[in-house]
Length: 89
Image (tube, rainbow, N blue to C red):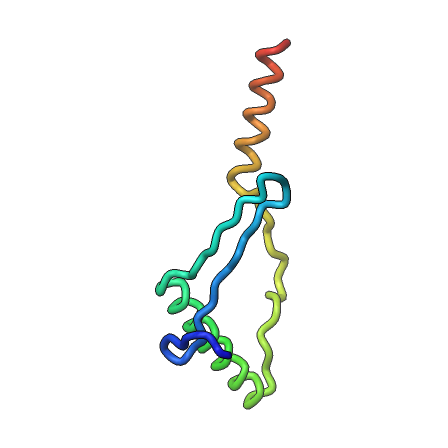
């Protein structure tokens, strides 16, 4: 038996369970905004796919050398570690 349908899509839930005792469990449902964004992303992906099929041109990585930077939390984590070590010394 199929589940309820909302705006043409099947309603679904995520069930999450801890892997250690007491094995707490929760049932989650995506908010309407989550589904709207997901639908917009799927529509955009289909649009890009159709354009690529029609033109034979496929998006790819840039041809120039890209710069990679640390995520902001990584530097903070390192500075906090240094501060702790200096406090111990």
